[in-house]
Length: 84
Image (cartoon, rainbow, N blue to C red):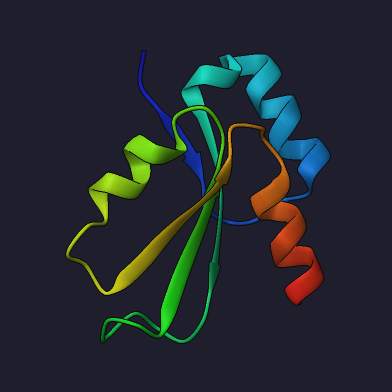
């Protein structure tokens, strides 16, 4: 099955509902914090979910600094809500 990355930072409850629908192993919660990613070190993509480490690897060498918050769905969206 494909992997779904919700990088629009919806509510934690919404991303968990998406996980219930698609299977939590196939969903990654994401939140982008920072300016447009033109240069390394200024923009972070926070990720959570069981497959978050695999998604973080996809951004290695890119302007995004991918940071994994853990294996649960919801923390990345919660962080974005606090940041906003």
